[in-house]
Length: 156
Image 1 (cartoon, one colour):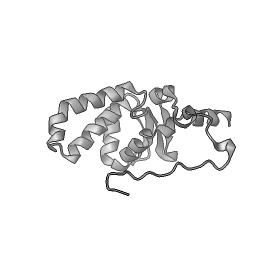
Image 2 (cartoon, one colour; image 1 turned 180 degrees about the horizontal axis):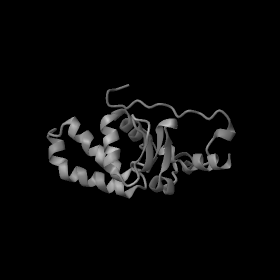
Image 3 (cartoon, helix red, strand yellow; image 1 turned 90 degrees about the vertical axis):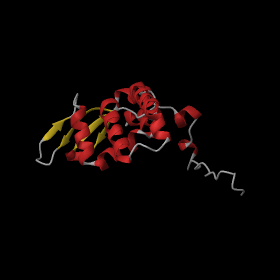
């Protein structure tokens, strides 16, 4: 293979015809309502977060990210934004446009409500960057918001 050719991974074959998607929309279609109204990320006894998708039909998130990139384009291009500053900016954007509601158990064992409290969400993200990483990873996946998966769950 030449250096200009991209490597591709073969699409995993379905194990049976019953597993095969009927059309491309079954493979990639998402539930736009869930993308904007959110899905619950369950952390067991530690709490839960109701999160919209980071992208897709979540126009608030997309608008904020576009505004951020426009505002900081020169600094980004010149590599003048530190990783810490970029992360702090993402905490704020996610707290205001992705995390819609939630309750997390604090160190003292009490549940902390996050509804309408982006500052509290940012505080959790600062103290627990792994929590932010998990939220960002999950809500960035279109598969979490796949319409066919949600329909299947509703049947069960």
